Image (tube, rainbow, N blue to C red; front, side, top):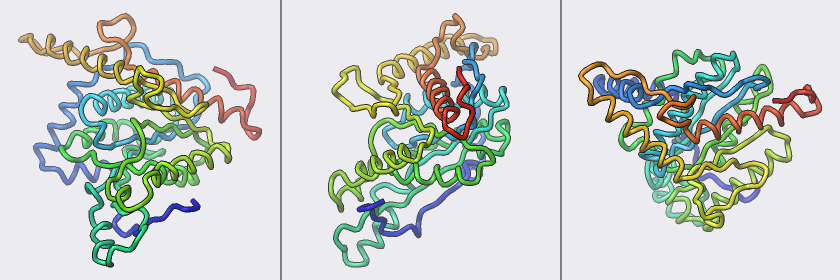
Length: 311
């Protein structure tokens, strides 16, 4: 993109979540999936999948997602995976963060080179594959647990993450949709301190504009949207809002339900949401299903696809 610069890519990594989990101590690698299984409710009433196209998800794994936001997102993402897998819809799940806070090895190289002005992005990217398009969902379903390791969620360079996801689509057997979930704007303290203030935001907007111009079937779920309509702007035609208070309230309901169940001497039954149960549907689940449906409609309506498709 014009005006966007990268100081070095030497320390960027693309890693499968399975390999990350394998590096954890054995007790942690065992306990994290168990904890996730105990917390995540199952969807009692999955949304319909008729007409859904292959889809690639891109998840924001930044530090601002810690706590209830990441738990709610991964709960929704696992139920969305169950829904698509049961319908035989191909899908891929990716995540993006950084390997270090405030730059890491990239920032160190810049410093050792004499602090050249306007260096561009000076942080080490970490892009994570949770499930490849051709991988079995049952083999990948518990890999989200790596996100609960203390310190795993760091900074986020959204524009480059989108470019990475788009590049992976080049090898798809069938054209796919792209659904992104994020809770704000790009954030990298090292890069922001050494470049114009809007450097990362400008690049993200350039990438979004380019995707729109190329006709990419893209939707973005914007988490953390305030009840104040002026607090955070939404990109018209692209963004699906998921309000912060709705996510927070849902997570609190789940925590209360878990506490009641685990107060029993018997093995607690699995938590279920939706379908008239005590736990309502996760608002991120609803937003994800809406994003997938809208992106599928957009893909089906392209000239080289079946424009008669409808949901």
